[in-house]
Structures are given as C-alpha cells and as structure tokens.
Image (cartoon, rainbow, N blue to C red; front, side, top):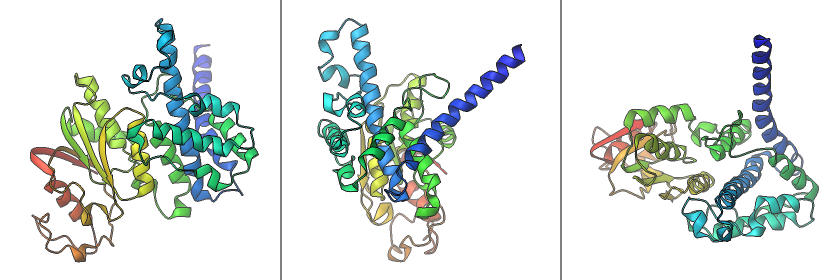
Length: 341
C-alpha cells in the first residue's frame, strides 16, 4: 500500500510538472498561423508578467484583509513597502481574464501594461507599447491564450509550495529553447540555469557591496544574488546592482524580472555592448557574476587593439573569451571577486 501511494505521488508529480510545460506550449500553439513563431515568447511573456504582478498584488491585498486592514487595500504605500506593485482595477489579471472574450481585448491588455509601467518607475521602457494592438491577433485566439495563462500559478511551484523560482526567466528560457532553431540562437545567451547561478553565488558570497554583470541577460544572476543575502542575515538592498545588456528585448526582460521582485538596479542598454560602449567604465565592483557568450568571433576586437582593459595581453580578434575575462578583471575592486561561466 505504501509503494502504491508513493507511485501515485510520483505519477501526480509528473502530471503537474508536465502540466506547467504543456500549458506553456498550448499558449504558443494557439497562436499558430496568426503570429510568427519568433513572436510567441514576447506575447506569452507579457501576459505571464501581467499575471505575475497581479498574483502578487492579490496576495498582498488578501493579507491586508486577513490582518484587519481592509481600509488600506487601495493605498499604494501598503503595497510598495512590501515591494508589490499596486494595480488599478483595469490593470489586474482578474479584470483582463473576465474581459477575455471582448472584441477589444488587445487594446485592454495594452492599456493594462501601460498602466503598470506608468505607475511604476522601475519599469520605465521595459513593457511593450501597444504591442497587442499592433499584432492584430484574432480575438478568439487571444481569449484562448488568456485562458491557458490562467492555469499557471506564478506563486507556487509544481508541488504546491511557495515558489522561489525565477518564473519570468523560466518562461523565457523555455520559449528561447523551443524556437532556437528559428532564431539561430540558444537560450543560454539570455538565461543561465538556476543551478549554475546558485553555484556561483555560493562561491563568491555576495553578502553586501556592489555587484555587476556585463552581459546580464534576463537578470537571473541578480535575482539569485539578492536571495543569497537573506539566508545569511542580510537584507534585500544590502547589495547595489549594476549591469549592461546589448539585446534590447532581453534588457527589457531583466528590468521586468528585477522590478517584480522590488530589486533596485542600474541596468544599462545600448546596442554596441560592453566592449565598445562600456556604460560603467569608471566603476569598480565588489562582486561580478557573469555568463558571457562563448567564442564570439565578430566582437570588433580589431578596433580595440590599444584598449587599457587588456592588462594581460591583447585578446585575439577572432575570439572574445579573453576579452570578457579582462573586461571583468578591469571592473573588479581591489579586493573584489568574480565568478564567471
């Protein structure tokens, strides 16, 4: 009987795990024939983000009611102090899902995203502007997509426990992997697996000080660093976060990823990248966590032969690996530590 129970539990666990991944695939599948596959992840990610911030808002609102503070459920400061975005009625997922079958649902989603960005400075420039209206999605397919997103609980993991996962990053990783062939890129350029980030954070122990990632992707390194501080007696905010990213879409994801966690950051974007336009050239950092793209051959090294960052020798023009290591070393404070994939 005990073996039967264990077997059933394992089967149920597999079903739940499959359900999350299958839900993600179903959301994309509903767009087939309407949207280019390279756009799937942007559509789904925007909706996942909206549901995530809404779930956090509803969780905080319920807590206020349970604490006997119902009079404060519409006061922004009672959400902000817990790093939760206050959402007006028309920006909440519950409102969007109720209106899913309206012909103007695309406009309503755009309005919700605009409202979230407008009322939260940390998201400035991060959320798409009139994206759903411009896509021209069929209203019925968009409604089906919203129904699928409803099946994803962003606040708990597959076992029903409170989630500590990088949900936004995980969604992005999944879609990048699925469409890597279409886009000619691998998911690793945008998202570093959690186990690798965990290992780096454990190695360099970023309890406090300034932390930097010169190719920050979706911001997973920063999320893990902030979480590493808490179990060791520190507080969120004990470390100051800086980063740079050359891919605009990924930079927006990093902004979203950090903002939903209430993590203050200075993440810079420019399409020239850290080598040719080092946005933070004069800053030194206590900790650097990085997963640079491997073996980049067209990094423009021929234009940087005399760069002062090359303290251990000029990097080869045909491979950026040595350049990344020296760029990172250049930015280390005198007693700083770097962890690099």
